Length: 161
Image (cartoon, rainbow, N blue to C red; front, side):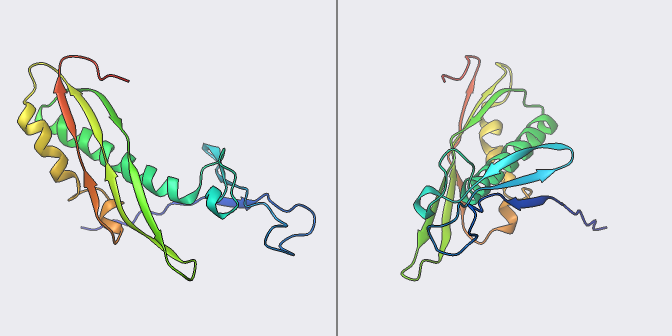
């Protein structure tokens, strides 16, 4: 049985400086992503494309979506397998290549999850579960570039910051 899920949001451009898009440098790329049940996300373009570095850009949000999806599926698979995860952190990186026309595309995203498990949890299984996440993560299954992961799983001691 298949089920369809729909995700809705509102996007509002807030970057009109009074003359609209009259010139490439005449408008801000600022915008707000909103949903009635969640806090707004202040967005802009990448600073390389005249964006505000203090706001989230679409490329960062794509990498964040992949990182979140991997974590959520990993936690589910770990819990189902009897692995007790006590901490999880990820330092994810996405690489986008821009061509001569200015168009670009992601070539890969690399996730670097650092996972702490309970002392009596199976370390080998906890490491192998990362390889199974790609079979389930909705976001990773939807992109046309590799999503690699380089996990570090340890038992017992807190993950260093």
